[in-house]
Amino acid sequence: MATKYLSSEPVTHLFDQLPTDMIYYEIFPYLDYNSRVTANLLLPRQDRLRTPLRKDAVLEFAMRLGSTSLVTLIRKQGTTTNPITRNRMSLKIWRTVPLFPELFQYNSRFREVMAAKAAEFSDPSLEEMVHITSYTRKELKRLCEAFLLSLEKSHPYKREVASSSSKENWSAV
View 1: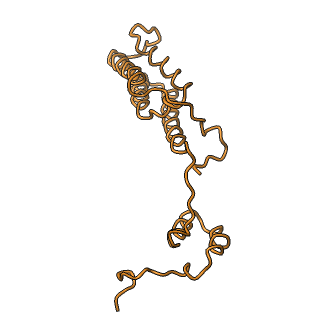
View 2 (view 1 turned 90 degrees about the horizontal axis):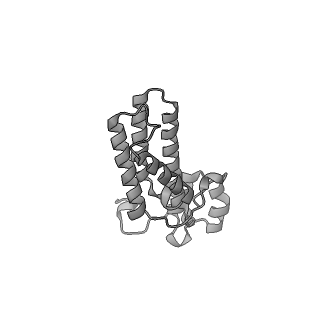
View 3 (view 1 turned 180 degrees about the horizontal axis):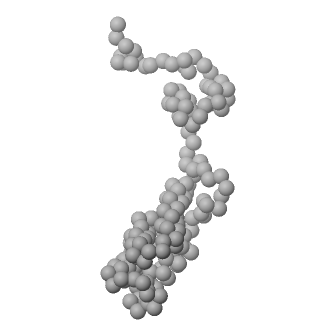
């Protein structure tokens, strides 16, 4: 006897025997997320629950991911006492910033602050750069100039997206 899964007949489940309302209101509340997704896939296509994402949910997630990554690097740099490690962390921060263009395309305040810092670090005669090696100074200048150029050419400001970090219970739906 051939198994049903290899035949051309549609596969039937116990869910086919139950009314859809009973499944939604009596079974789904007791399932965890992964079990709900699996159970939803067992339902006929027309009976599946669909929950679309909010309009800016993906942007908010990308912005949160980028800000978390940058904050982690900035905190590491702030607690570092070794000047060489601080130099490396500074370069790593400026190499990481362009990886998250959503931060400066959809947040005007972040864009202004980063542009001001990039302009400040692009100046080779900066007095605050006491413990910085010549390599780090040249590389930092190159990275900051490239960042400022990309702000003008590749990553224009589009619009403001409300930061999800101010919301207590963030959800994509």
